[in-house]
Image (tube, rainbow, N blue to C red; front, side, top):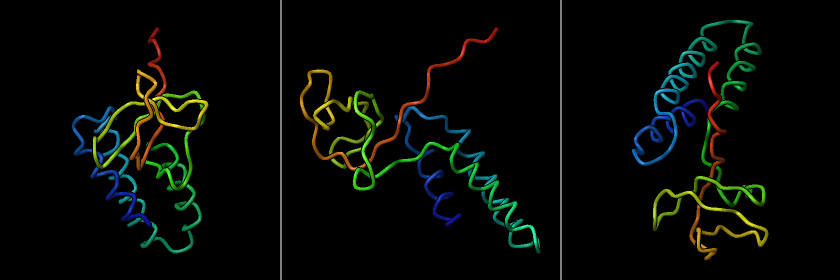
Length: 122
């Protein structure tokens, strides 16, 4: 389980045109690897480590297969297609991924929500 997550994070850092924070994903992958090693070495603390790993996993953006679930309607999402690569598309009321011309884009295999808007520093 941990190896799969770390592998996915490391692969995602290689996508130069993806709008994700590469150093954060590398740091998260490092943290998960370290926690995984700690869990194996620590007797009786597995539940605490498992809980920490689950919290970390929820914080990390990840690709969601369209076969697993689709995004909420009326949202823009980062999408991946084997044919066209990475793009940002709208998921509309008809349950289809659409470009800015409202044309349906087929062949999408994975998606992830876009990050929230930046917060203004005070």
